[in-house]
Image (cartoon, rainbow, N blue to C red; front, side, top):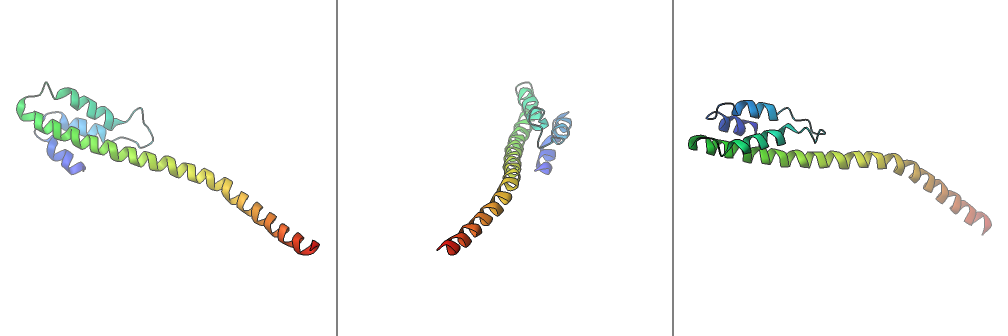
Length: 113
């Protein structure tokens, strides 16, 4: 994906700077997402660009939209994984406690039967 962005970046001056700016995005930093900022900045430049550069800017914006969608999926997976890790700390001790209670129940049933 980054190679496609660079290929589309060559005909437009300063577009390569925007692309480099957006590749520094960190996954967990939503409000300061550089991909979204670069996409917004490039979208604003579409109308002011000459006709020869509009196609390249539109292509770069589309690629940034795809990258944003991929980043959103990664962020969602990271949230789910964090929740599962927290659940694991609850689940494992609770499971051992329930197994111990089940064993005590089985022993008491046979003892008092």
